[in-house]
Length: 160
Image (tube, rainbow, N blue to C red):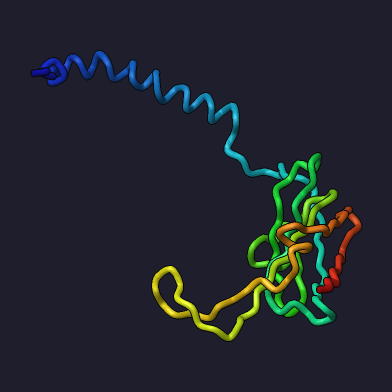
C-alpha cells in the first residue's frame, strides 16, 4: 500500500509551494508578455464591398457568399449573408469587418425547400432543403474575385 502521509505535513506545502508557483505560473506570465493579448489594429487591410447575387436571372433569396483568400494573401476567409439577392460586408450579421484586400476564390451556397418533409437527426419532421446552386459555384467553385482598396461592388450572375 502506498502512503501519502508525508503530504500532510504543513512544512511540505511551504517547501514545495514556491517551487510550484515558479514552475507553472512564471512561464505563463512570460508567454503572455511576449505574445501579447491580441486586439489592436493588427489584421490585414480590408475593403467594404457589397453586391448582388443572381441565379438564372433571379435574385438568390437567401444563402452565403464566402471570400476565401488565395495562397499568398495572409487573411482568413470571410463568410457573408445573402438576403433578397444582395450582400453587404459593412452590415453583415456574421462578419462586418470587410473583405481582405487581395485575390479570392468565391463560394456561393443557397438552398431551396423541395416540398417534402423528412426526419431530422432528432427524429422530428422538417422541410427537406437541397443546394440548388451548381457545384461550379461552391464545392468546385470556379469563381474568382480581386478585392482592392477601391473595390466597392462585386456582382455575381450565376447560370445553371
